[in-house]
Length: 57
Image (cartoon, rainbow, N blue to C red):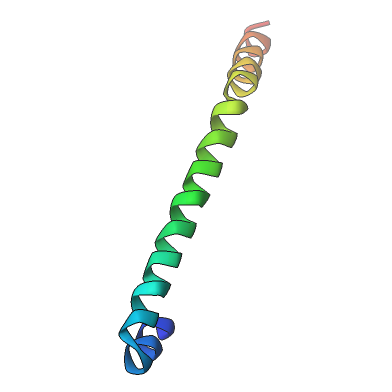
C-alpha cells in the first residue's frame, strides 16, 4: 500500500506501471502454481488412494 501512496504523489505513470507490474507478477505466480499442482496431481491421487487402501487392511 505504501508503494501506491508514494507513487501517486510522484508520478501517475509510476503508479500505473507499478500496478501493471504487480498484477503481472500475480498472474505469473498463479500460472506457475497451477502448473505445479497439475503436474503433481497424479502422484498425489495415487498417494491418497494408497493411504485409503492401506487403512482398510
